[in-house]
Each structure stands twice: as structure tokens, then as C-alpha cells.
Image 1 (spheres, rainbow, N blue to C red):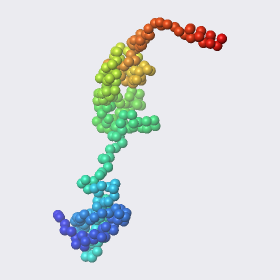
Image 2: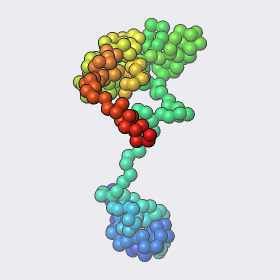
Image 3: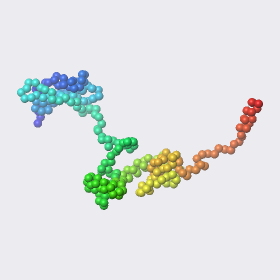
Image 4: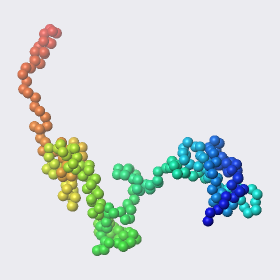
Length: 255
């Protein structure tokens, strides 16, 4: 039901402006932009906001009049955004904003109970039906020493493979210029389990990927089969050795 603008409350522009100035401060309230009926004997006066940090915002001052009263009173003063207002970015929880490498010394990152990258390591032949049941199973697994309560799921392994291939995979510039793949390098330490069929860890201190997971199809210039005769070009034999003449000349000068 649409309400009519109360005559007394609608005319209380000066009262509403004073309230906005008291909240915003001097020289922060602009022109009166209009009035809206909020209810019976209740209206909101709109004023432009002159603060340079709040472009497109406006001051909204709600004024009310009690029954049979001849004056209006202030109900609320707020700063509201308009259609073209400059707004802060939508809030994203910390758990969703964190990126790889953000966890530093002393920091803790909680793993969600239903993390799709993980699955129960031991579930007594059946997957847990509720989060409470999953917590209970993990507690029993830890107490009995049956192994890890959660292990990588297929989705978790696939995501890890994508990251490793993008960093040290066969399509990188290093691999395309390498003399041979990591699968034939003596510095490669294969991973255990299913991932070992495609990945290993580099153990060459001089390689740029030392201590990192690499694809067996990756490669770099520090391959173990790059021997000395391939690492440099021999200088031609010495044609004239003038070091002896220089020494003899220096001795004759000081005699």
C-alpha cells in the first residue's frame, strides 16, 4: 500500500538537513534531492553527499510525526549508496582468498571437513553419512593407529598433477630445450604410488627445480648425461708462448 507524504514531516527539510550535518560534518551535505514516504507520518529526506570518497552516495534522514503532533522528529540518519555509487569489493572470507604459498611460518590453515581433495583413509567399508560420523571415524583411526585418517581423493590428485605439469611439465620452455627428459636423469627420485608413474623429485643442487616435483617428461640443462665434453669448447693449441720472453725482458731491464 502506497503512503502519502505527510505534510508536516515532508516540510521538515531544514530539520533533516541539520541532522545530516550533525552526522556528516560541515560542508559534507549537498542539495535536497527529494523525499520518500516510508509509512504513515514517516518520510525520508534525501541529500547529496559531498565527500569526495563517497561518489554517488547520499544522506537519508528519516523524519516521523506522532499522531496529532504539529512538529516532526528525527528517527534515523544514514549514508546510503546510490545506483552509480563507488562500493567496496564484495567481502570474500579468508579461507576463500588464500592462494598457494600464502601459509607462512606460525600460520595455521584449517582443512574443511568436506574438502573434495581428500577422502577417508579408513572408513570400515562405508563412507561416513554425516560430518559427525566422519569426525568419529577419524578419531578411531588415530587411536587405533590404522594410518592416516584422510588421504588424497582422485580430485585432489588431479589438481596436484595440473599444478605440477604447469610448473615443470613437458610443455615448458626448459623441457623443450633440454637434451633429454627427466625420466632418464640420474638425479630424479620417483614418487611412490600411482603418482610415481608420471612424477618425481629433482635432487640436482644445480638445477632450478632442485627439491621440487617434476614430470618425468620434463627436462633441463642439468641432466645427468650432460658430460664434460659437451659442456664447453676446447681452446685451440698454443701457437706461441711469449711468457718466457716477457720474463727474460723484465729481468734484463732490472739488471
